[in-house]
Amino acid sequence: MQATLQVLLGGLVDGCVYALIAVGMSLVYSITRVINLAQGGFVVLAALLAASLQQAGMNPLVTLAVVVAIFAAGLAVVDRLVILPASRRATPERMLLVTVGVLQAVGGVLLLVWGNLPYTGQPFTPGAPLDVLGVAVQRQQLWILGALAVAVVGLTLLLNRTELGLTMRATASKPDAAQLVGVDVDRIRLIAFSLSGAMAALAGAAVIPITFLQFDTATSYAVSGFVAAVVGGLGSVTGAVLGGLLLGVAEGVFARFTGASLAEVAAIGLLIALLLVRPAGLLGRTAEVRR
Image 1: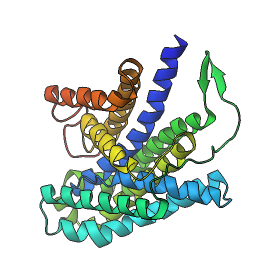
Image 2: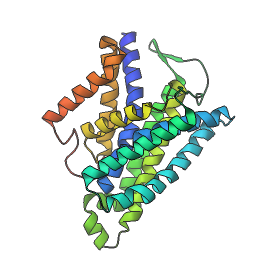
Image 3: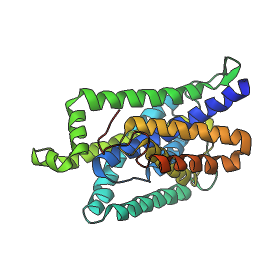
Image 4: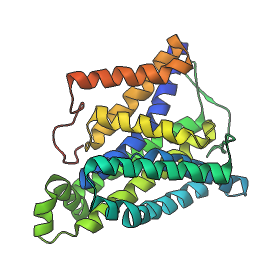
């Protein structure tokens, strides 16, 4: 029983990271109709930057705040300099290739700056693992679970309880109509990319203390985040969270019975099979951002 719970816990923690990636992807897609595969690369870039800042003596929690701020601003710059100009000339299919190019560029930066060695970081709160019903729970795992909860609650409040959020929802639903009534659509998409950058940094800085990441992890995270977003339903925040958690748990279960080398392939294959039953994803009905 304890072994099963340990597997489920590990799957949930991995799923939280996938969910944060998928939420960023879905948020950007709902506003821009661009599937930003580079989101997985920014997670690893944020993680390795956080590890380096910690090695330089910065407190892990201060590091978290710094990388979130950097990537919130950085993704807005990437959109303004790369994604937005390209989207005005390219079809959605070609835009997918543009984001793949950005992902490869991020991978190149990772390899150039950090090399091909794996990196890890320091936990936010040091200490021995907690014993919960016979399951060893690392303190950093609680931070990751909490990070997803705070991110989703904060985004939900923003989208439902603020004028900015309602404007973003309107833009996601009918961008042409929103522009006609005076909404600055370029500003809204800039905010969407900024939020996605914060999500990427939050995921990267939170996960690096309990794992080893290197430059080629970017592609793996990009694929996992994309699958989670599509399974949940592109454009749905809740769907992205559900898809990420399902993928993480599925990988954990498959790793238990088939080995780690086949777990990712088997889990993604299973979830893709679900799309044959529900092509729009579990919660995907419209392009509107939903809870």
